[in-house]
Length: 339
Ligand SMILES: Cc1cc2nc3c(=O)[nH]c(=O)nc-3n(C[C@H](O)[C@H](O)[C@H](O)COP(=O)(O)OP(=O)(O)OC[C@H]3O[C@@H](n4cnc5c(N)ncnc54)[C@H](O)[C@@H]3O)c2cc1C
Image (cartoon, rainbow, N blue to C red; front, side):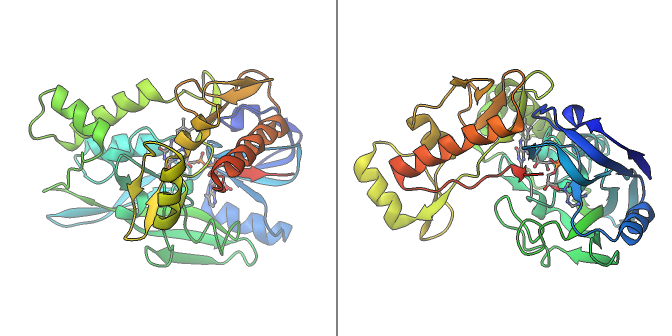
């Protein structure tokens, strides 16, 4: 276990917020996590992966535990599929590239999502028509209260849109040390139904796309559309896309023209939060050191030396305005840490 006192978290969060951590710890193995919990008898340390979905509002006095467990291991293999076990500290996109290079299918649509493998189940990461839950077998996780290890299978994780049991009932109660995936070896389920992906595949005259083609196409779309946190601090989408009742959607359409939507079930409609925010006049605006990205109203950015508090306050202005104008309460996708 590595321990550091009084360090800046600027390089440990993709918003680039400069707050001080008084108790920063790095775990390189499962045993180190277990020992840390037993020794410190701490409930609820702040668990940190790549810091790409977290906003620190203030300096942090509580223990931070950064999970840095490495390793990719093939633990089972048949003619059709492989079972792969991955350390929580592996960088997500490095692992995706590893699967593509080995021609293992299932993660290609999730190319270039920032962050680490251990954080991926927390909000069931998703993009371009795929979600983590589609390939997730199980994860190993350690209770922050008892230090005991438990294995959660796919059903037990209660995955849903940008959520899981680890964001709801068991929020901050378990530290994921390892994630296991089931990936195809042949007859890959190629999915390019998402419009921009379909377009890029067609425009490049690819008739039978491989997982490599999908991964490269996703890479191109994401690189052209999303701000690189190394160049401008951000955490991707700040809010989730709200899911509302069909009746409320109809009422909204009486007031607004051409409201974009995706049907999620018979009676539920998902509205792009970016559209709601843009309609409130927030796309590409600057407010002090913070603001929204000029291509994406849903992405709040750090234009310079914004404090976590400043970014948070700005996000609440957006939230209040959307509520006032549309009577829709946005929910944060980014994890807000008070202190
Ligand atoms: C430019 C950009 C684009 C993005 N695009 C997408 C996208 O398309 N789809 C998507 O789903 N997300 C997207 N995100 C959000 C982010 O990439 C994911 O949420 C990612 O899984 C966060 O990983 P992380 O390691 O950085 O997590 P962190 O920010 O370090 O942590 C996130 C949460 O998980 C908890 N946590 C971290 N590690 C563990 C662990 N081992 N055990 C238990 N809890 C843990 C933390 O306490 C925190 O609550 C984007 C972010 C950026 C910056």
